[in-house]
Image (tube, rainbow, N blue to C red; front, side, top):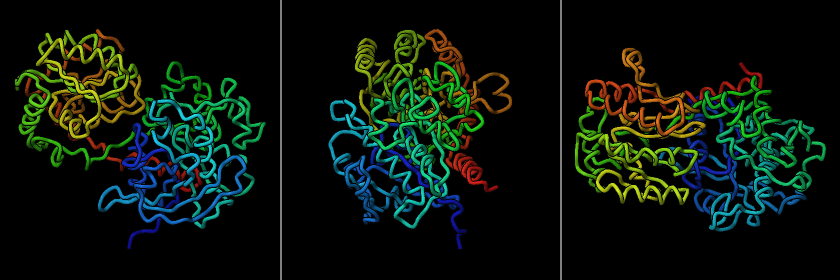
Length: 493
């Protein structure tokens, strides 16, 4: 007989893979609840009823109606199930409100990339329903111990609960990226049904506006973010983005928990997207993927030349502009470069020009392709991730698991998960990549040259690969850390 669930957790999120995903939050919203349920916690998601959510969940049934929320349109709450695989399922509550969610485009923007003008109402409703379900005002029998809020879109839930006079769940606020804060005009406070006195520096006010994220950070019982190093970085400029004072003041209630990865989806021994599967015991088989990647991307077929891979948003945050600066020097080493991604048009154009100027050495694919992203991780010799800031990052963990040592800037989760290759770390078995401290073209190139030197020492390179492949990046450790915080919030040892 399985043990009874330890805790009931309402996981409030604006996106979840595979139904809707714009970034890491979508992945976390599927993987972390699954890992928490594996620890015998009763975790249920609360999601906005976008068309793709309503179409993607199964066994929908109406469990409540909300027609007396004066700030919001009439709303129906559905109970449903999200199937992630043949054996993995998540129970979900879906907010069915066609007036706010039934539209083309993405979760936050229309098809032309413009923010929805009523986003304050759309995610105010998500926060409000979350608060109702997490209190004694809930119309359903299931009552959570914890309301786990994620990013600004659910940031008002802790505020609504703070002002609720009855019984209520404890609250946890997770920051996935502090740069996005949900800032709206001050009139939104009354529009969303918050008390006027909440609009102060000790409340939801943020430089004269309402900030959903600040509300969550101020009122939540505890704050987490997605790596220990990022938890330190956001307590000061520049990565505090105006909230560093509040976060520093709440440092005793702020924890960094590194994200995990899906070790079934990202496993070189069974990955269906690879030309040849391999493991740390059969590392020689990795070479078949390099050959396949060179052929697929029309690079010169050369088993000995080091091949560097990038799978990324092509943005300033990700350091792509710095990579572009040093690409001609990288080619002269000699080395090859494969880039997969999209985002800022100017960077896309500059990368395309580089590929045109260096045929056979640089290949660029604009857009996203899941299968190709797996082949890049397996086929590249090393992986480049020169992010200016990176709350957690996933690709550096995929890379280590695939025996593709990453080259990273020492920031956020990159610094927490990659150990720089030095004689000392090679000797103690912890070395798993190459880390540079200063964000500049010069320091990125120096790290690449260190990697190339190690690559040509086959014994050193194989040791580096095996160190990375031996690391445990599964979600179990992360879920256990979250469970510990849940227990502390409700006073349970």
